[in-house]
Each structure stands twice: as C-alpha cells, then as structure tokens.
Amino acid sequence: MNIAQLQQEILRLKKEKDVCVLAHSYQAREICEIADFTGDSYKLSVDASKVKNKTILMCGVRFMAETCKILSPEKTVLLAAPQAGCAMADQMDKELISQVKTMYPNHTVVAYINTTADLKTICDVCVTSSSAVKIVNNIENKDILFIPDCNLGAHVAKQCPDKNIKLLNGGCPIHACVNTDDVKKAKALYPEAELLVHPECVPEVCAMADYIGSTSGIMDYAVKSDKKEFIIGTEISIAEHLQYMCPDKTFHILSLKLICPNMKATTLVDVYNCLSGKGGEEIVLSENTIREAKRCIDEMIRLGE
Ligand code: 13P
Ligand code: SF4
Image (cartoon, rainbow, N blue to C red; front, side, top):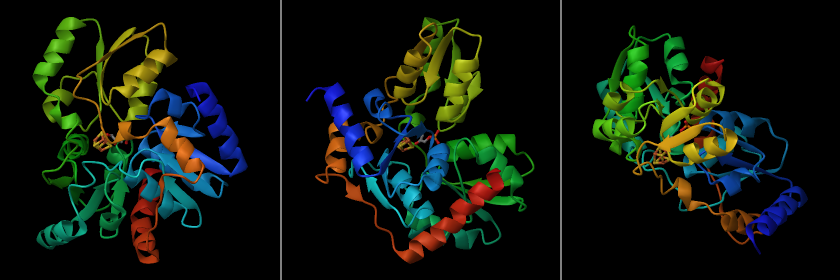
C-alpha cells in the first residue's frame, strides 16, 4: 500500500471501529492528516474528554495517552507507538517528589502535564505550556513548587513576580540543547525573521525571542502575523506544518537538534496496525491512580478557565 491507500484504509477502520484519533502537533504531516484532532497537549486533553467515541488512539507520547485515560476512564485508550515515552516525563518519579515535598510542606505542587500519571497522583495541579502562567496566577498560595521543567518554570516565574516559585533541575533535553550561539547563527542567516520559541528552551534563548509560547501558540502567532519570515524554536515538525499552512511565508528551523525521537516514533503503519488490533498498547491505569491523578487535571481545567 502507498501512503494515500494506507490513509484511506485508516479512515475506513477508524469509522468502522468508532475510534477517535488524536495527533500532537509534533507528529508527521501524514499522521495529522488522518487525525480527528490535532494540537498542543492542553487542547488534546480537553478534546479527548469531549468525544463520544468508545476508543481513543493517541499519536504522541505516553503521558498524553495517560492523560486521555484519566479524563475518559470508561474509554479504551491506545498508544500507537508503545515505545514513545517523554524524556522529561521520565526524569522525576513519585518517590523523588514525595521526598522533595517534605522539604516544602506549604508549597502548592504544580506539575507540568509532561509527567507520569503516577507522579500526578501526589501533585496539586497540572499545567501545560499554554496554560501555565494563567493557572499559576490563579492559584491562591504564593508558594509554588514547579516540576519538572525548570525552563518553563523560569518563564512562569518571570510572568508571575508575586509568586515564590521553587524549581528543580529537570527539563526537556531536546529544547534545552539549543543555546544562544544557535540563535545568533540563525539570526545572522535570516536577519529579517522573527524568532518564535517554546518555553522549554533555556531562559537565555527565550530572552532573544520575539514570541514565547506553546506549540499551538507559536502556530497561531505565525499564521496571524503580518511578518513573512520566521525562525521556529521548537520541534522541527512545527516549521514543516506551518510551511504547508502558510505557503506565502517562510519558516526556518532554529536548530537541527530540535528533533524529538519519541515524537518521531509513530508511523502511519503503527496507526494502521493499532487500528487492526496488531499493534499499539492499551493504556491501563488502576482506579486509584485515575482518581488521584484526575484531581490534578480537573484543577488545571478549573483554574485555566
Ligand atoms: P505543548 O504543551 O506545547 O503541546 O508541548 C508539549 C511538548 O512535549 C513540548 O515539548
Ligand atoms: Fe518530551 Fe521534549 Fe519530546 Fe516534548 S520534545 S515529548 S518534552 S522529550
């Protein structure tokens, strides 16, 4: 089968088996094309909670599929590529954070959504990159322990000067790899271009940007902007999607280091195999994990409104 035939077969199977396919915006174009919803991690988690289908198939990484299961425990949630973890989510576990919490007993524990379901059970509220500033501002407590991403945390701390934010030494190894030399080189090559970066980049890189935002935030900004040329400081697939969406504009990749192997793990064949019952993995979480982790996600939705 060629790509178009595979896509047709996937569309047919999806309908026959009542499956809703979600694709994070870092997924390849041919996967986004067959998805019912695409977007950033916040949008996907809300979309997943509203759909009527009996089964959800996540094209993304494990914590995203877990979030869908927590929000829709009655549904079957499948992860197309079982090997797709998230290097950041795997950095901190429940045991470590339980110990850290004893050092900061009066702090509200704010967990980036890029954390495991197990870790979420002991946190107070989740945030995503697009909702973090608003949610932290809406938390009554002044004292916040923000985990695991110290770069997103530093970005939030800058926007929320009234809060006392304690950060740990975690983050996305892909975004955090980009440095100011990479930015200088890209700006020298494309002096007219605006620089749009994800807040998982280090503060020195963010300080050089014209816009800092989530994957959807970056895409919206570029689509609506009057400017014609952009350097994209997040996973390289965003520059590719934008180039197709806005053929009259030009998008450059900030650095070739910005390739997430976990996000690139899913192929169209994985999606097909998963829908045919020959691949993928069903996400199974205990009732207790779902109940405790849901508190944290419900708080995110409540404080994000
Ligand atoms: P968004 O919250 O912008 O979707 O980002 C998810 C992610 O994994 C970024 O690396
Ligand atoms: Fe995780 Fe970073 Fe990949 Fe996003 S880009 S999924 S934070 S490893």
